[in-house]
Image 1 (cartoon, helix red, strand yellow):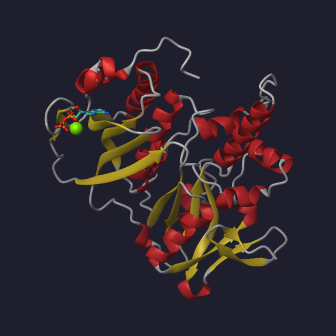
Image 2 (cartoon, protein in one colour):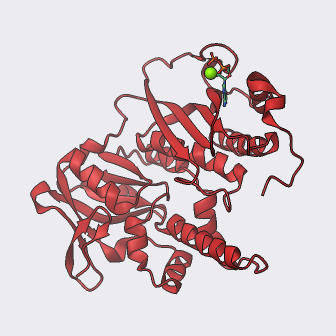
Image 3 (cartoon, rainbow, N blue to C red):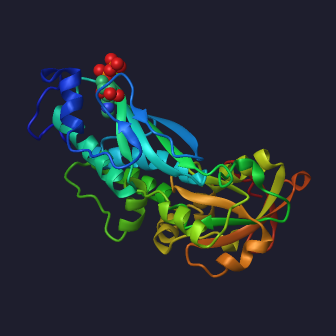
Length: 344
Ligand code: ADP
Ligand code: MG
């Protein structure tokens, strides 16, 4: 994909030349005293706030496939995945570090694209790139990002705070990123079988975007403040709704009852899943990478988000001993599994 563009070997710049080149267009806008260039970055903490730190590691061939994932999108998504974790703690991301391992297959132009995506995310989400590390790899690309954020200690939301009878709430809609992934994989197979066939992606922009260009719910972080809601527990949906329910349930020592008919699924997701003979509900339960937020709120807060278009109440917390259940559209109650549910 990028091998065709003008190709400059990374080795021609040296490690520090590369970093200087890649970071020259980034600006510092937060409480960063010193960014890239010394042995460590320097951050001035905001009085009274706690620091949140989260890291992710992405490995080529395991977490992403460069045959259809553009480098710019990869850079953007890698940042988003980390920012999402900070928002899930009800915190505000302020800085990131980016560490890379690159094989000689990657040109300077390819890494520039990656950093263009990282920069776009930094600008949109107002975070500072403050450092990282760079290494060669024998094979493939690895990218690890650490996000640093801040939150008022009284506002931090843990996975462990859900109480019995709390409402279970999800933002946005689910299953889209997974269906986008299925679509891209399908078109890749078609292409490998016959490179002259044009990809058939028409009408599926939404799910492709959910896969290739997800966003983190900064708007929800802000909205919760406006609505004066402090969730009792919160987690971001990176591995699928079912798996995140288990995380919340385990940490909070509660069970959950989920209503299938309430699970928000976009029509594009629904139609594509049906086309592939997949159950749209299963895509929402088990498909990952939507980067929506799953939260529990006290029933006292119900009025504050009732009918709000960004939130859907999908269930409630029960006693831990009751376990995790999905109440299907036909009214049957199934035990939920972390990978979906035990179907029949
Ligand atoms: P050291 O040898 O002390 O680890 P480096 O030469 O690796 O220092 O890094 C020099 C500076 O460049 C540091 O500020 C470091 O944080 C930054 N840096 C290194 N790699 C990256 C990268 N991939 N992205 C952003 N900053 C980087
Ligand atoms: Mg280093």
